[in-house]
Length: 220
Image (cartoon, rainbow, N blue to C red; front, side, top):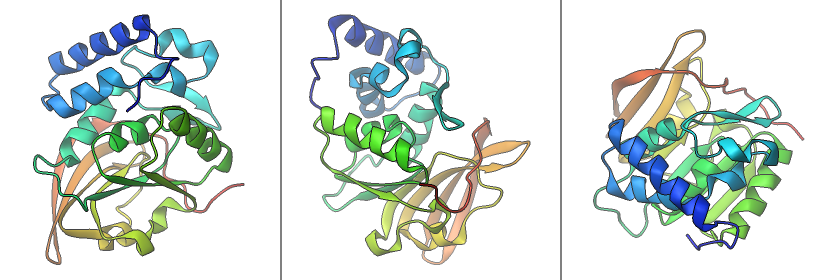
């Protein structure tokens, strides 16, 4: 990730402090922690909330959506990032939102494909990523429940909104050995890590979470 002129010395220090807090909370991947430390989170939140950008909390970004808590971003990323990345590894992100999670993924994967159903959020995120010189991200305005089959299969899939059940089309787009991290449930949600082994899928419950719902369809 390039160091934007908007990423001041104060913000860099705030990013490093945030990464240390996440490490104390149990995040172990040095690659993920470094990505968090170097990402200017204040660029991904409304200007009025910039003073809270490096707090370990979710924040509203408009359209009824939020930028996830940094701990959750780090935890979900840590669970899908490979210790031995391959040149052709691809990740699918369902729910671009502000683009913050996208930016973290773009530093850890060679190619990121990101879907967003709300077009205004997609365009804002695209501008932010361009400002940071992150050009290994392809974006699509569409229904996250359907995934992006023409670009699959994916080494990893990360879903940033809660589905009432795991979408079958996303499971089909995982490569053999690939991993998907997804919040599942309505009033009670759990983070699920799903690993594909041939045509079998192994499910692991990670922890309780709270996400906005994964709504089918797309919006202008």
